[in-house]
Image 1 (cartoon, helix red, strand yellow):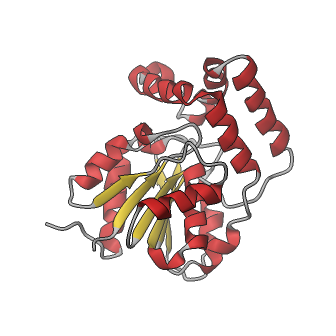
Image 2 (cartoon, rainbow, N blue to C red):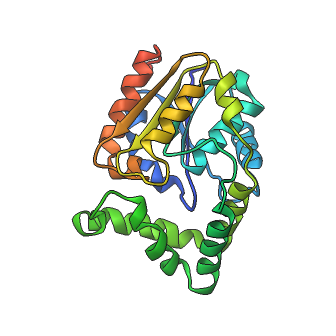
Image 3 (cartoon, rainbow, N blue to C red):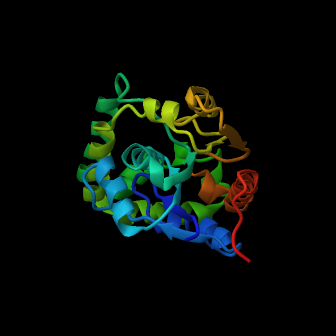
Length: 242
């Protein structure tokens, strides 16, 4: 059975956040699957749902919250992971002051609506001037976030608040890990990804920074992301069937 790449969306994201990359990778002969993590109450439940819906060996490709789900997969079933690609994410537990900030955005979504949340939250997540330079891309992301709704948003925020410290997972994971950060991502910085890579005791890790991109780098630069993912798959000697 071929190794399957599982693309895991982040906060208030769905398959649209991975669709172009999924098409690019599948076109090269790889088996792919885009996970749905919109209904689970915890990161552990999200990871378990992926294990239940797939068979065989996986490479978990997780964006933001999805990266934390990927690390939960590695904790729950390390024998099923042939590698991880951790994109614009973190491994640390709840930070000082984070709870108040998370509660603030939950309140915005419920009292002012998802459009207000999007206006508050999305622009800083992207490379500078993205809304004006790439209006179609911004609209695409905005619609995805708005359609998620305040209940999904709060459920996923609560899952993130209750997240475990995943640094020990990185320390003990023995398969290859690719860390990918956006140059302009102030939330999950390139430096944060370098710090995570330094925890990997196996030495089988690599950090790549995508220039001209922010937190949604795989949507902002799908062709670049697809290219670097394919290069990494070749490097770890995994190629799609022909």
